[in-house]
Image (tube, rainbow, N blue to C red; front, side, top):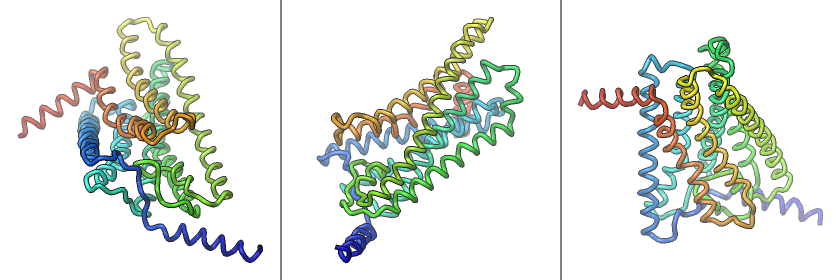
Length: 323
């Protein structure tokens, strides 16, 4: 028995090291549906690129938009672009060429950038909630608490935290020996699907411990967001001017809508009961929290924000006039 264990361990490691590629979940079973999904993803991707690109350009070029709220919105648009450019192109490529393959290195890179952008986006949404809280509940301290240096530090902290989280998760996940094949039950590389292929219980527990720490941080951000909005909705009715009340709601509701869509779809996707889990449902939920928000966020923020809408319109008119 003692002589068998090293052999088994060597076999596990060789199985992991011999994997040169993973097989992603196809978007559809028939060729017609694959091409339909390609067109759908292409349309959503172009909408996301156009919408977020316009917001980034409008905020960068419009000096009157150089405020903390629009600075964080610019950073949010960058994370949205990163999220959709990390996962969707590979899915579109596989649909066109009728393949499921992604290289081992490509999967690791996709997982890293997916975790990086999705984590940074969540932290930025939390910071944007703090911006709204200070603006409405502590307006006299707004310039002090959210000066240009403080905003830059908070944005840098969000990006750095996302980078560190992605680096730790990716390094730990791809250090696991894999012995249950190379087929992933998702159209992109994600941690839970790779964990299902692991054959090392101790390493899996280490990965689950890292996930637990990340979950605690995410829960802390969620509690902060809920607490902030409770304080905001208590403070808004006490604002004497009805016009200022309307402006406060118009700046909070888009953010609240984006946060609700992001948290509810992501939470249900990862914490849904196993009894209702299915590949088609997992695929639909992944599209809902990963692909749809980057395209919808610019629209949500632009609809109720007259300053941003006017800046985007001026930018578009300037581009048309140059042509």
